[in-house]
Length: 120
Image (cartoon, rainbow, N blue to C red; front, side, top):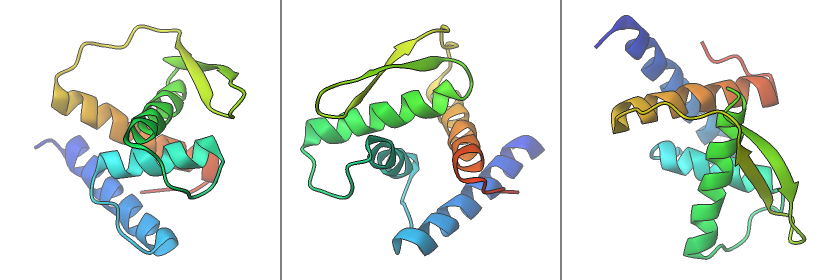
């Protein structure tokens, strides 16, 4: 593993610990963190979501964090308050590990930009 990858995993671990102190439970993986971001971005508070809504929340989160890198931009918010995004820059073709790494980097960027939390 490269030093960059080790630094990323170290920062990721610190984020998970920080989230545990806020929500009372350590998110188990990237998907759990994306779900939390999706709920936050939806802005309707904690409630029960259907399986489809949970997938939509993760999509919202992915679009939001990738918008910080210029891949998406907010298109509109529908009548029910759900944000809709449009792709503005083609995503690179990555394998699953590279995709996960990109999302982790962008999730860290999200927390640093949106909440002024420096995760070093």
